[in-house]
Amino acid sequence: MDNKVKKTKIIATIGPASEDSSTIRRLIQAGSDIFRFNLKYNTISWHSKVIDGARKVAKQQGKPIQILIDLPNSSFQEGIDLAVKKKAEYIALSNIIQAEEITQLNQIINEHGLSTSIIAKIETREALMRFPAILSETDTVMVARGDLGDVIPIEKVPFVQKELILSSNKADKMVIVATEMFLSMVTSPKPTRAEVSDVANAVLEGSDTVMLSEETAIGQHPVEAVEIMNRVILEAISWQKLGHLNISSAKNKNFQFGK
Image (cartoon, rainbow, N blue to C red; front, top):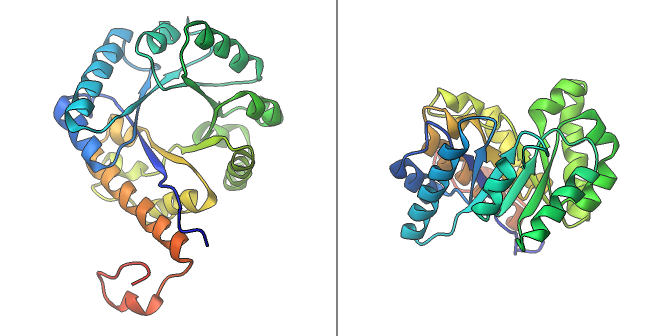
């Protein structure tokens, strides 16, 4: 097996629980790679101020953090203006129903001479039906499992996730798995075992990025959520590199994969 397995990135959504400089610094230290700003909540001025603050802290830490602007819809032009002004690395489009929405946004990005990547959030039945066309136009795919679970039978969501990841990998497009990964950590200091397995499986399936939403935006343990997610990712990558787990070492409570 190829030992050069890339690290799955972590997106942390910024909100009231994580907007201050101290928490942002700790989120960076814990392993966050991308900060998401969901324009469905708060004001444009709030997002603008916190983005500036986050970049300042990241510069002080010597670790570049990428900015993701999440638009409620493709006609939310203020949101597009903010993304352009702040030179966001990513713009996510919610509730996409056709590839033309991505094409139009790409034109705006190109007009401003930016290299911003577009993320197509797959969360509608129409997006699933037109996924090949959307995949050909977008830079990145987000598997938005929460809303998908409302438009398709819930038991199909894990398998749709696998298909979307596989198709994105084949097309060499970045793919993000999102929604309720560590939802219990909104109130609990630790995730459930099922949630840990969910994150690990997303990595093993080929996800390039995993996302925390409420966990870091409004949760009681935002930094701990990133720290534990980072540990799970590293363990999954270790298993991928080695191709096996030395089960006998599990007798030791503090065993490490492959040891």
